[in-house]
Length: 220
Image (tube, helix red, strand yellow):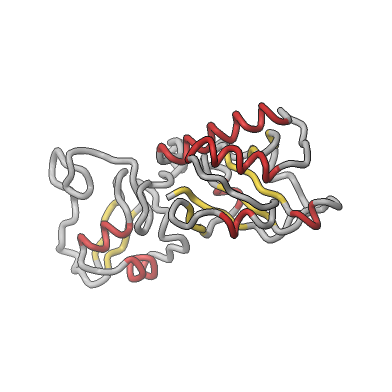
């Protein structure tokens, strides 16, 4: 089994096609829980190839032989979610994700600023509509079922990791408040590792206890 160093612009699906294998085989060989999230600089084990195989990209080309690096990634999506912070580098995101994060901040500041108005789903829906022109209905624990699947896909990662990436939609089935136990909560990540936005800016989402049933969705 040979190895390949992941470059910015790589996607697991493109690498699977390049090495004549499958996304599931690469994910299995590398213990990748979320095929939509791979990190530049990490080493990928390639099943079915000998150690003598060379997988370095051609000079002047991207990892897929293109004209240059692209912010692209995921098993079949259009954007690479991030690159490792191990070397102190910033998390990279697609233009669509940054657009949603910006729309989320604008919606939050126009509604509650830093104080919740109890209208989290309204803030998230407003941000999605402003970013993509799509109206999404439902309260905090319903909005996940109403996100258009041609624009969003569910991803498997921790809340801590998600908060490092801008433009992800978070939904919880329940929170510790009376209304939250009925309607849940939803928000959009800002990418700073701490805060999220809905009808207000929540400075420390990691510190908000009593929430359960987390789901995370990524713009496609």
